[in-house]
Image (cartoon, rainbow, N blue to C red; front, side):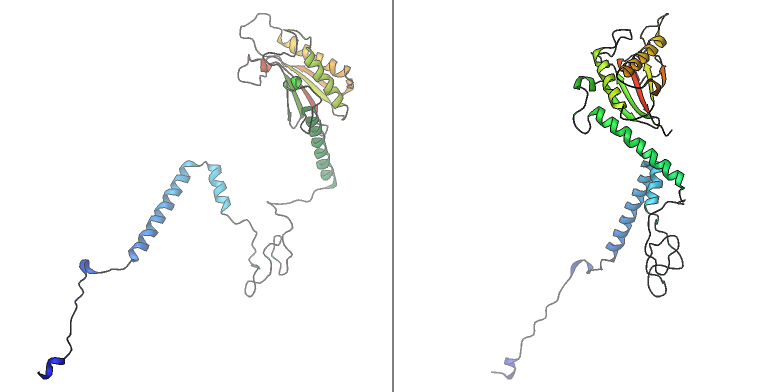
Length: 278
């Protein structure tokens, strides 16, 4: 046996990579940034096209700072100084925090202004109480279900408007007269009882629907005024002080509440419990 027969066998393996090898992923990051920027751009263009000027202002205000910042104190320690950024107007070194968020100036109210605001709030509260009792918002109403179908209420700057109107199958007055139907008398009696709880003055307005055919003798003014007068008499019969009636008017067919001026819904009586602070 020769001496070199025990020499180790050396095997060489050559690794062949097809395609030129890995070139890194930095391009993916750049591409993702580009796609994100394009999405933000198209989102911005869509917002500019799909929103109104007022909506765009609201979006801009949302991203605007609303906390007052003073250059003297930043609310931090060290070079910034101060320990609270929520102080009024100027950020004192030891501020105790903002008392109330304010928009613009907050002038001090006089005693007369405070009293006027308190009286106005009391007026609104009293009218809302009358409305709640009349419509049964806090429980059972004083009116029957049939009568409630004829009434809607709304609170305005003038006062509490109680609108009593015709239904297609049930009218407030007999035909083209000022003779009230029983449902109208019921509503008037309940309103007179409720109005006794306050001292507000009362206004009454009569309204009519227009006629589909032009009439030479169309007594809309006389009829609307007559129906308002009949409501006044019914309220007084129910106990309302006549001195509290401030005005009684007939508007004819000039103030419809629905687009169709001939609709029965325009036949109505408006009783307004006036605010005494106006």
